[in-house]
Length: 157
Image (cartoon, rainbow, N blue to C red; front, side, top):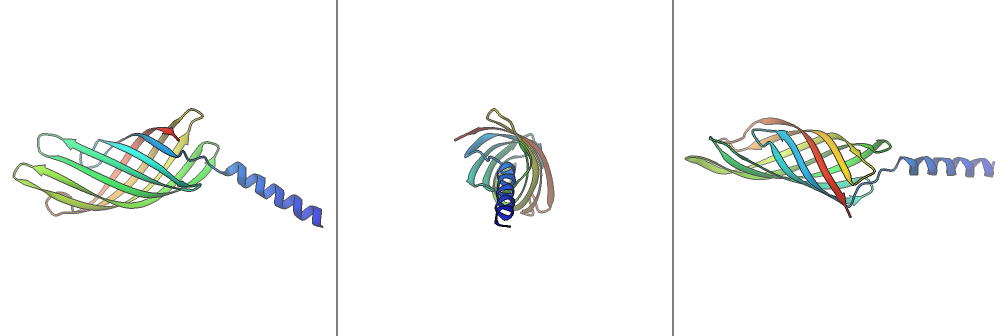
């Protein structure tokens, strides 16, 4: 009975090890999507532990009607699907500023995040995520915006 129990424990431990994902210590790149004109964001991810990381995104827009930037920070939980495929979910918030001619100011937002990513054998990470954002400023963004974006990041330690 003891041998059987030790064998089962060893097999469970090996299967859990095989399912563990590798989150890079750092990842830097671009997150390209569209949320009220914020078409591109510089994106940085920082490893916290085996299943958690922080993500910071700096987005900007400049068109005929408005100039704006926003900084978003997210805490993410990362779960392995299979091999290099992971899915993640997160929550966070952000701040920004805008200038629309005679109308300018700042805004705050809260955000959620859910996505899927593939971690290549080379230091490349591709992701696709959905980020609903609720803004707090009557003049710029006081509603729920849905942001879908493709991310490409270089991973390093």
